[in-house]
Amino acid sequence: MPADQFATGDEVQVISGPFADYIATIEKIDADNRIWLLMEFMGQKTQMAVRPGQMQLTK
Image (cartoon, rainbow, N blue to C red; front, side, top):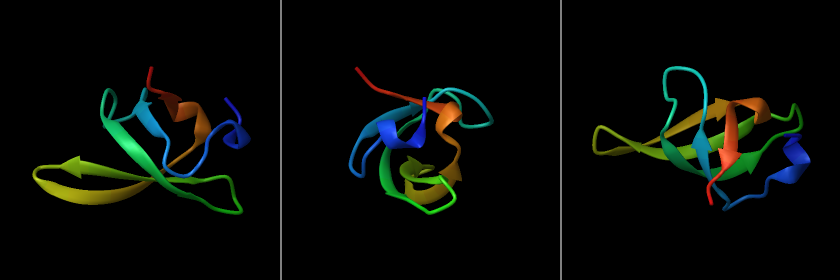
């Protein structure tokens, strides 16, 4: 899915990598099409960058 299919505030599920199956919220999309997610991990809010192909919108 291309980065332009996502928007700030969307809730997404990570589908690949070490955080597969985590649910997160899109915090921002940068000029390099990296999508910055905000997720709760081990009781703390954590920011991480992913590529659009590593996630999908939640239903």
